[in-house]
Amino acid sequence: MGSIYGDWLKQQREQAGLTQQQLADAAVMTRSHIAHIEAGRRTPSKEDARRLDRVLNTGNVLSSFLPPEEAAVADYFESARLLEQQAVVIREFALSFVPGILQTERYARAVLSTSFPPVGEEECDRLVVTRLARAKLLDTPVTPVVWALLDEAVLRRTIGGPDVMAEQITHLVRLVEAHRIRLHVLPLAAGFHPLLEGMVTLMWFEDQPPLAYSEGLLMGKLHDAPSVVQQLQHRYDLALSDALPLKDSLALLRTTAKEYGHHG
Image (cartoon, rainbow, N blue to C red):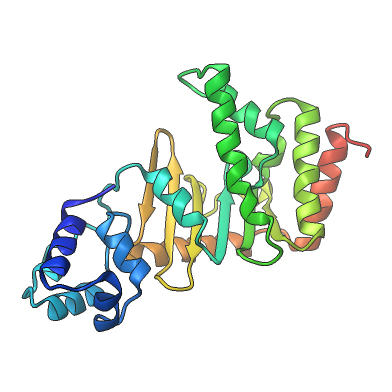
């Protein structure tokens, strides 16, 4: 995936005879951040763009012609999926269903098999495998640190039937009990909250600025503009302040699993 901006940066870097690492060192950035900008996955901040202009002797071209903060990035989710694997901290907010990295196989199949337009069995199998592969980032004991904030509607909407729901919620309970994730439920009684418009994923990295991914009906957007990412972080914090504490959230998960008929 490329972009006019990223392609031009790469061209200027190569004309200057610099590697990505050399440019990164001179501009006080990281090589991976340079790589993401050149690939069209990230947009530099104004300060980063000014430093790139100085190093590459390009006047103020890179800082003046930054893509708009809300510009579309092609193939949003694919970019988010790749960056998700590099994150050291992930905070998920789910409004309607369990986040992909926390889904069980049967729950994922129930979600993907009822998509529109319909997909065939073979395509559904492929999508399920891809989704489960994302969850492997939880196989490591510590990194990334994962927080999940779930609207209570996620637990109440029966996807795949009671048995699938019981299994899925029990999976969440086990992840919390194993201290692999931290999970909070935002109760329906909280009413309106700052994230009610859609799902959000916040990601932090070791060597590049944080970003956010938001998703709604037939659309997704990867945000790397600092002002937008910060606004979404603030919204997440506000919504989290209205959520149940960890202990109470865990108790609600266990109760809900039993309500779906789970007795294991």
